[in-house]
Image 1 (cartoon, rainbow, N blue to C red):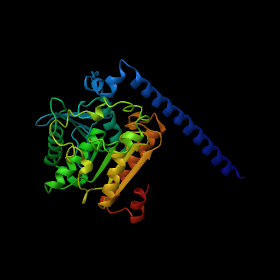
Image 2 (tube, rainbow, N blue to C red):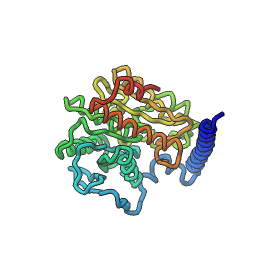
Image 3 (tube, rainbow, N blue to C red):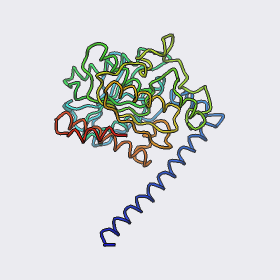
Image 4 (cartoon, one colour):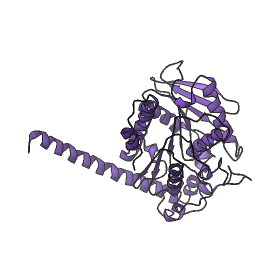
Length: 338
């Protein structure tokens, strides 16, 4: 064996050790989530969203490398994170935060905005703090997402240079926004990044049963926020703007869907991916083994979370090259392989 091969073997062994350590850490995080949700005092408040809804956080300190601009939309406020004080909105991620449609934006999504900026090579990130239930049920969130979209267009951003991203309820809202745009003959965004998207508020997928005892966040109870009807109100939960799984996807832009294998919402992603692919949409569905709901919140601390953000960065680069017509057919197809 040559010296070069020896070094390569050592590098592989070190990588395997790091992956093993990270997987152990991920298991520890899963166990901690499960322990917290099993606690009789705070567990129900975590699962039904009460803690998320009433969370009080200190003011977020914007890192010196960023500029954070407050924007007033017709019914809510929004934030634009950029590298320049007066940015050109040539490329934008429209981020729609999660929270079960009952939790407002929190500091974690400002951190997410920074990550999108980093993986997108300095891309601007626009995040509306849309209205939430029960005070503002459907269609309030969708109306605010549409207002955010219109603000970007009025500010000079082209639809084909906007990527809509969302996690959990925000992922479902991203899809609902695109379904609305499509239904009203409006141009669609360049792509979609969906992290554990909540696409089926009827909870009809098989994973609601098969992962019932495995999901550390929503499992072992029917009192969690995924069964909450505050956002649905008196509307039909099968309405595509509420449960976008029941929409039609012909003509949709490319999607990146990431989900954990032990989530009760796993089927929300797998069924969406199947339906979109059958409609001719380019879809990359990545199922992260042993991962929980929106594990990407681990940011760069969990190996699986880090890989998910790296994958999102690759997806953004593929979209860039696709738009600039510098991407080969083989390279593009490779992005959407399982």
